[in-house]
Length: 306
Image (tube, helix red, strand yellow):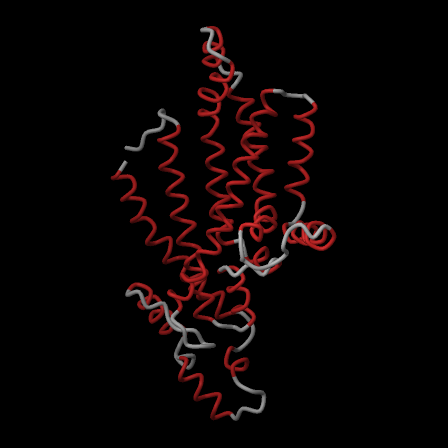
């Protein structure tokens, strides 16, 4: 297991290097000159050239890329074009709010999704099963920005039961967590249901029932544990995408996380902050996938890594 983890960590190096190339290329090909945003419209050509030289934008693209990657390796992710703040410490300062939102939404998605999927599979073709399938279809179909606006309209504006913005307490996280977790909840419900339906028809489940084991033990100890492999894959992907996909939700609810901060810096063409943000999300996504692969062996004893 430790050899496998070490090998996967080494494999992250070329992956992140390739991601850095893509991130750098996309940011530098994006229309819009950051110098034009930083300076007034009546700035002279000398002022423009002086600022470009100060920011290093006068250098060839390959030299700027090498300097950026070299700084990342040494822990210096650059400085903001807007206010001169160091990129990495600034991004890490916004991470707690985003992690808090992601954990809350994942707890909701996994808790409700797995429970609903198991009950739906055990009681196949019941009214609960039909209701769950319709709810899962709707959850996947609705975009999260629309879900967020509707939740604000109902629970914040009309009922006044929950706050619509900010991060001032546990009540503030309910609406953004539900918004961020709705699609994931629907996906996990569908995958859990289909996996459970496949597992409960296996011979060893019939054998467990024939031994006189309680139905609850058969379902949750034997069937669910075997079905969790497919569910874990979805949960891992959901967690990775959710860490990098909070931009819309955090913007809608004015949640002070790294996603909202990234959106603000995109509008300001703050290249160092944007590139650092994308690279940080990519690194976290790769690490989450590694955690999911390791968890497979803990959940399913049949899986072994040589």
